Amino acid sequence: MRVRNHAMRRSKTIILAIAITVTLSGCAAKQPAQPISETRLLLDTVCTITMYEPYDHELLSEALDLCQEYEILFSRTVEGSDVWRINNAGGVPVTVHPDTVELIGLGLEYCALSGGFFDITIGRLSSLWDFGGNAEVVPPISEIEKAIETIDFRKITITENTVQLGDPEAMLDLGGVAKGYIAEKLAIFLKEKGVKGAIIDLGGNIVAVGAKPDGSAWNIGVEKPFGKSGETLGVISTGAASIVTSGIYERQFVKDGKLYHHILDPTTGMPAESDVISATVITESSAVGDAFSTIPVLLGKEKTMTLIDRVPGLKGIILILENGEIFQQGDIDFIPL
Image 1 (cartoon, one colour):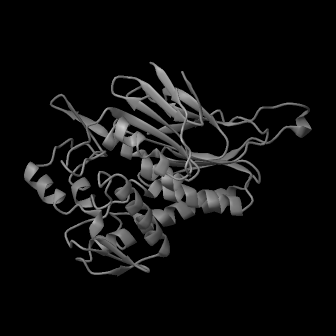
Image 2 (cartoon, one colour):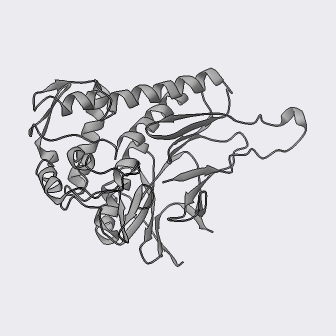
Image 3 (tube, one colour):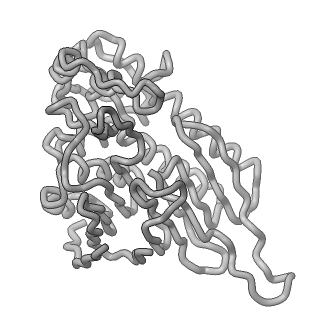
């Protein structure tokens, strides 16, 4: 594969956390302790937090409890959640948690940035597709066309802590922004509790918090599209940062020789088609990284490059193109394998 490096103008999956092992040196009494870790099935994925000092298992559990609380708040399918209540209100304003308002507001920013190709009112369309089960069914065109008519982020109204859908048939789906937002909230929680170094992995949405005890960089492996399980394309060496990948290989099925994946184009109702099959975004904010990471797959490389100066805290981006080329831009240390 060819790799291109470009200087970034600065105006403002699954990814696997690897090489978290501490480098040991000196006498045994001075060796840093091994990290502690806890894993739960949350957000329809495997979520793991790996933490160094203070080596507190109770704190780990508290962080994952917080993750679960956010899942209940933002889920489209959990009855009584903020998003469920908005989607089932028939267009009536709904009072929600301030974090829900903040998350929807973030989503709207990236809806606008993408010109509507990324749209959080895609819920009725995404509910027609089953990429997590065994159905492998392409929805009827008539149902897709009806769902497309309900997609328009501009019809969302936010007034203080109330959210209203202008189209009573529309449905929110915050899956494109929620994991990053939650990962960032967990990072803030851990830092406030005095955690010096940790890796938060919410199904591939990675946040490297602080630093390792020996001061070395975090090494984050980027999964190879359509590779074997655990096969990495390369390694990102970084300090504290967020690394998020979106790709057409993550949730997909093949029917009659055609690949159908979960990143849907709201203008066609079908899986997006562009020259980008995977995008890895390195940012200061996990919420921003999650929101932006889907956009390259929807828009393609050239249109994406016109937007990067408008993404706050963007450190770098790695695009895998359909021809196998790796395109890299930004102040990042990425080593292809």
